[in-house]
Image (cartoon, rainbow, N blue to C red):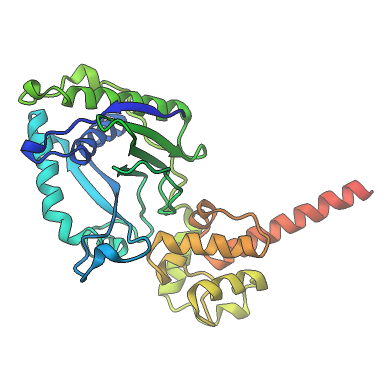
Length: 315
């Protein structure tokens, strides 16, 4: 969708930067769209607050995606929402680069393959947003230009996961919320419910814990399903990809990738390795089919199908 210009709403005297206002606004949007008042989303951090000497001089990216949780029910007014988000931001800064997989495994009851559905990025420098493989379905970028009073809003999203009409509705709703937050003399008022009235719509996800095959894989692995490589045929290219990414010689074909490396980056690495070998495999394919056996079966099916089409054509 085209870029939009929005006012740079912030109240520095209260410690509420545009990033704080944006997080609060996005929380209200997600709450309205999903029908869930307690929401979590990702926020891209620079990583320059790491406890390292001269971290600001490190050459190269230190970025990471940090989870932001906002329970909109805990704020009765716009100002309370901003203050809650601001306080959480300050408290969480020392931990903003804590590994996401450890947060999931040690601080939540989420499945280990859980990832962000949406990601926010706010850049004060006038730069072009790039594609960052954190596994999100929708990314909302805000960048500044020559006019420091406005920000440029842009959405990047997967059409397989999110419809264009939903993204357009979310963009309009976010602009409406930011406008409501821009009036300082009205911050002590609650959000007007009519302005946020929207048919609850879940972002379509092709189950990250999708299918019984994944559950069986976990069950087989935990039951000591040993020597399985002798009974299950795995394509050599599939084994090669997994060994390249995980560096292990013997991998149980029915063990999900996230049991070995609890990070969406593993899915990115696997997809990249398949592409190097000439296969059209995307990160979402890896997340849907999480074991060597599943991927091998799919590639075998494609091979048989292509051979059948070729024979029909030649016949």
